[in-house]
Image 1 (cartoon, rainbow, N blue to C red):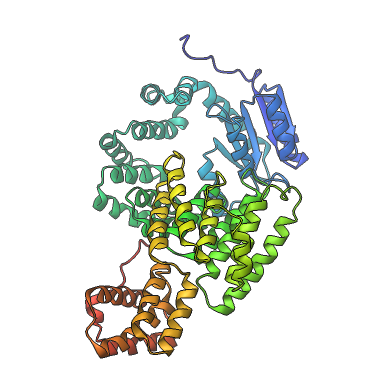
Image 2: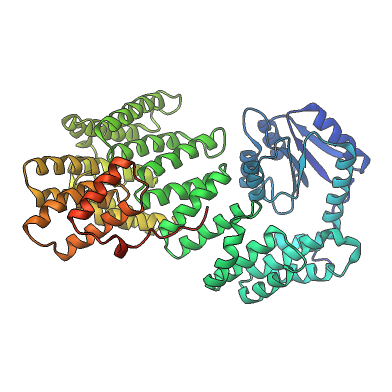
Length: 556
């Protein structure tokens, strides 16, 4: 018995209420007083809440999703967790007047102990408080084991308490804890049997999701697939299933599939910054420069006033804008470069940024000048830069590498890339996605010396001068850098229709033709592009049936 701390009595509990509405505080304080709780603190904004948490350790935190203009509840919860002001021992209740599916998905991710919908009802407050205090008292030993990560002991206590009919309201929670302990212990066959058995009596989302998780962990993909199709149709399981599938595909290095799933999951629960970061990395790995920009813009949008907000994040938006400008038409590129230039000036003039990001601003300025065909001015800047890793930030070093590459300074570019690979390999926090992206970058930077935009321009000149093989090589490299670019694929077919008049295609050219044709077959093209595609298919005698239909992605 000495091993377990005694449950905290209502008289000793410390409670923090975080809400910007005085009436909410009055209602909850009144109910807490009636329940015997004496130590109650109130905060009307996030900064006040943080100050209180530095002074006291709270047993219960009641947190409004919309605290005030300074932070929302999602970001405040993240910050309280990061500083260990909220731990596994803390009971958390979310308060919100909003009940949209987007909000509910975000709250489900945080896994609070309860969720109260405003306007609050005094009788319901009293009932839920009584429930919460009962949980803390009855599950004291179990919660302590979970806090200690002693999952075997937690299972033992949960199974014993399932025999107690006086706490039948807690039985679903106890059953969930048993199953999740089995997953933590990696006993996936037993977890599969356990969750399968629960399905006959419980139709909760967590039962279905954890059953699929146990199947995927055993690589029983066919059995899991039958259940996944149903779960993607259910509103209460769709988001969790997409997240689970994204993680599964990531672990199996199926990056295109992971990217598709994580895009859908991010749209359903958009406030999770870490998921947007994974989305950003996967967009880069899949050469989706538009998706890359959208992901980092969403990061900046949802990070506003959170622990994630920083000038570096704004810099990454500008960098992604430049990456997109390297692959689009001249007209589109000019608009993007104009936007990037304005954003860079605005950022460099922000209080506190001057001196902090001088080198990063300088290198980004060189990239803008280079993409504006002002290479002489860009070279003046980059000649002062050494091919060294000058920052702990991977993004800073990637940007330097790209600046060297875009100026044709290949040796400097590869030197930075080599050192960057060493940096990432020694960084235990870097993901496999980033490592894979750098491997891809190394191959492309060694073999391809120009940007997508430059390659397209060179191909156009070569085509006009009737130099079909150089035009083909330009477009082949451009498609490698931008594998989803339908216009490049169409141009490739146009050039290859000329090549095939002179001699049969070789094996490498046939593979390139196959990739371009599949892309165009799978894409939803406007009428004019469809007409061109069909014309080139006929000239090249492409067998559409042999290419097959576009592979179906998981419904969503």
